[in-house]
Image: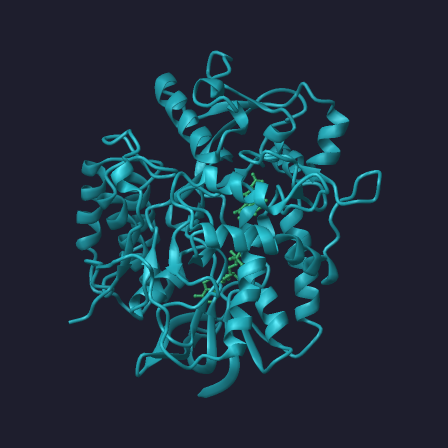
Length: 506
Ligand code: FAD
Ligand code: SIN
């Protein structure tokens, strides 16, 4: 069966929901989510959304903080668009019904997080920002004019004569359907579930990246996977995020002997850029031969902590830790992908008719290391831009990336025999601390994976994405931002460039 829409939007996080709500004003919209509509990274977001809303702040300062943390690889035009259009994007969310927490003066309360020189992070429900955004936008989506399909998985992009014409979609029973569209938007989120320990939901399996690569699109910055410094890691591998906002409120990192160590890595100590803190924790764990370090905020009043961080407080308690009573064990976990499907500033990919936005895309706004709370903002700003570009027209030549594109030595046709094997290879070789030996071992394992079978289409896309990430990580022989090479510990000015990739078919 073939169905036809003006817009096919793949993903129901902030990027997909926001895009669908704008697109429905201009045409018919089909919106897909692989799991339930709210099984998204967006729904889990804790700390908040950053924007220069305060009278004392301005988008230029926000841009400077973002560029400083990006470790030399931010695209300044993308950062400017992000920070200039940030306040407007936040106001749109408010109009769509998101109720941010307010201070005594009635204005949105603004928190401070790592690498931000100003308190500029709006939050909702204390530390349940994502849940509030997801709920408000879902309510609008369900109000009409959007054909919402939950548990529908895009398994292949349809590319005809160099143009994307939609996707093959497996329904909840695994039955394939063809959905054609004038414009197709990949808003499929991140890659965390390619790793054994992640803050992301199980649906974050890099499908968009795998599908786009397999269709011949250009991807970029793939080696930059962000490991959040502070997750409460359970014995089952689950990693419950302990928001950076706790460090913004004074939480301290302590090693096994109770010594504060973050200031040795950076003058901003616990509030240094995320990559610096994650690296300092990883090194402290190695020094102490420990599975975790400690995070202590018990010096703040218990009542304040329960009110400001209801989600983290409850989540920790469920896992047997009371953060008001003493230090809790934390370790880095896979959290966010700075890299992804390359797009121009208007969400256009290198394939005509195909757009990408949110975490699945890389516009260059985060460089090698994203600062806290800039991701929700990116999803909001650039999904709006992508829909506007699609409305303006999808004809004509697609854009080309500014950097040279290298052929990716990944056939795109083989797949890991199981999710456990894929996660084990990625965690062992392409995790927080990488080396040439570890990466080549992982790549060798991946090359031995068999030709993909039809059983699990997500596993096929994820396998392509995993191989691409590991390959890119093996090429960048320096340490920069979130990419930590133990065999190349320094940042090399000659590597201040981006790596763009494409699967080239014979
Ligand atoms: P998502 O919200 O992840 O949505 C992806 C969607 O794509 C899902 O609906 C999924 O089902 C769908 N999908 C995937 N593959 C397919 C397929 N093949 N077919 C159909 N559908 C598919 N960022 C901040 O800025 N501030 C924060 O405070 C913050 N806190 C975070 C806390 C946690 C625990 C996590 C995990 C992330 C956090 N982030 C935060 C990051 C941020 O939440 C995400 O980067 C952002 O929400 C991504 O939005 P998105 O719309 O791109 O993707
Ligand atoms: C957090 O609350 O620490 C997560 C924020 C983010 O990933 O931007």
